[in-house]
Image (cartoon, rainbow, N blue to C red; front, side):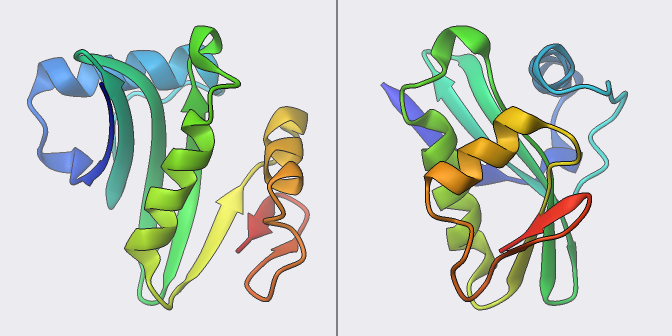
Length: 129
């Protein structure tokens, strides 16, 4: 059973932190060494982390810094589920998504009609929702 849920990533035990870092670093360069984020959204199946979103919150603005799904689990709707959970967390706040030069991530948001709605615009290094 696939679970998608939000959690405080700064309070995780080291073993769980390492699992998340491994997924992020293998699937979304550049590598990071710690989970210095306001919260995360995880997608798990039978204890295995399949996808991660890492978000920082500053007042009424949430910044999605990292979004990744492991290669073997892509094209199953997991990334969309993760982003939907992030959208639930922000309520009426704004969401800015950092995509940089990641073509796959830009296409992911464009395909799902995230681009062009009232809360989103593309900017140079980020996509704002």
